Length: 298
Ligand SMILES: CO[C@H]1CCN(Cc2c(C)cc(C)c3[nH]ccc23)[C@H](CO)C1
Image 1 (tube, protein in one colour):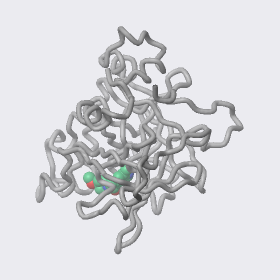
Image 2 (image 1 turned 90 degrees about the horizontal axis):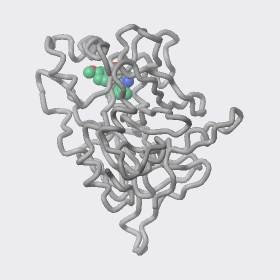
Image 3 (image 1 turned 120 degrees about the vertical axis):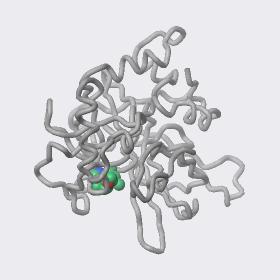
Image 4 (image 1 turned 180 degrees about the horizontal axis):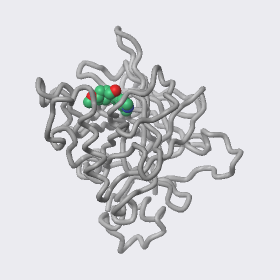
């Protein structure tokens, strides 16, 4: 059975990397420069990230996965969601982020090694739980036989305001940024601010850019939420359920760019909303791509 997911050091003085052992960094080396994204470790062979971190002509050898223990892993394959297409609604909508999610497979197909290289777990590197797997049922302390995927969703994404966090890197330190997912009557209010993004000024129907696949965070009500920077793309949106950690989203895009080279503005804006690909909305794809990874989907 897979290692227990979503386990991390809890004591205050623990190193940040041991409090957030699932965070990984993706680097893509192109002739035009280096692009970096964040990712979450989910199995020894896969990390989960955003599809928009990659270009159609990126090849596996240009991509590396860095884990918290400093190890760099070669990549065998990038599997973006088949429905992701940033150009799908051009020219009216310059960038379209629906289904912005990808799995990055670890290993080096060039090496003739029989066993694929795999991520080595340790106190700094551990998998996070993903919804609708047996590991998450255990993490939620529910009965393995009777618990359904709907119960996971009802438990984790209750109607209303759901406390969550993402992990960012500031001064080479991992820090958690608290946000609230608007799942109730504030969801439309949150989604509507998408039209304040520079590229969406002329759009009138918010559902053209914010599909049902997104979770919406940010803004100043009911709490002042942290906001993402471009460099946070692909990182996990995490819920802490009684000291077990479950990923419910992948950071996709934000309305306002309040960061200059990852230096965050000191103040947020009420319309600084962030949109995350909701893992509950891409489960058939996740399950089909992770079927041999021992996750036991419900
Ligand atoms: C619709 O138009 C906007 C799309 C997103 N944008 C950049 C961006 C990406 C790509 C990813 C993450 C995580 C971001 N967090 C904050 C900004 C931001 C810019 C806005 O600045 C234009």
